[in-house]
Image (cartoon, rainbow, N blue to C red):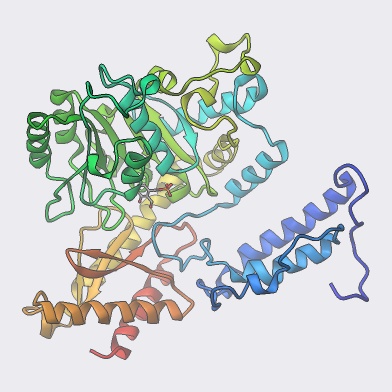
Length: 500
Ligand code: PLP
């Protein structure tokens, strides 16, 4: 706002909050800004063309001492913030895994912040607590899991998996880590956690935080399809027991981060049952595909898990954040985490969920509201249709890659993510020779960079068996086939412009 312009809003009053009439006017303006943003998404380059530090340099180093006009604040938002984010909502954002906020989800998020309901105990959040119970149950039904599972929302899969690991640790007979800790106890063995070489690093972080340590993780090799070798897991557990370890926790992943590989959950569940190990299923990404009944076979065996994580904020059109943690024995989580100070003792306690008792956080966001609104808005079938469409788009891209001798698909495509690299037909037989591989890796990195510079599509990369791998992850309901076609065209153009 320039000096000459009059502010449309009054400066903050000396005491109290914003005046309700003022709030109403501003909320209408913000609603228009939000709708305009979503309407104009494709006018933004997915990746902003900025250098590190350039935004910070335009912001005052210290806070304003006196109130500022809301017009000025909103105008700075429009000028500095909105255009300079990486646009996760853009249909050309195909990097990492999508994390898309749908219209009804955004409305729910707004209303949740209006209510500011802190879902600690039932007494201070009755409707929010009960809505969370209902929505957790809806989601459980939508992904086809039996009602033996209870659950709750957390912020992220990283935290959901950490909670599962701590609950599993609590269930280890004779350990009593909750009361006794782990250090300085010669009578206990070293705890052992298993996951595949492809598992997400959040499992490693959980082990670090829970006192298992990185050395307590045993990585089980994966097969050609990037799925855990169940027989190697079985051997590892036997060997570890012989060597004095205390095996207790296995993570099976449905939809690994790099390649969307699928661990054989059924075979892993057999081993866990035989060896009395906790089975945690990380379906943070893949879980959304269980909304589609045709994809359920990928999940066979997860109904035998002790805990499961599915992230609605990844591929269920839910504004960040919302992670669904399902557990078979809620009382174990409660025993592992429950500490109730006098000021939180309430009469309803035996009959209600006091959600803070099942995890680390006392204060919890009201995440169920946005989920409730978007599930009702799209319907379970509508959500499944959107997931199915993203998977179809990915399969179509995979078919184009397979039909082009100069490109190579580097992993199966069970869901919405395609892993590929450029490898001209002439190099097919020598591609794994170290020198050629190094050249191919550099070339594909350059191709990726060129596509990202276009501003139309944003892709990310990984490494699969030493090969630089371009990942195209499709998980946005706004993404149409024309965007996938554009992505493919840009990849091929970039390859033709990139030196061999
Ligand atoms: N698990 C898998 C398979 C993932 O792909 C990811 C993130 O991409 C995570 C866990 C961690 O998710 P969050 O960011 O919710 O902690």
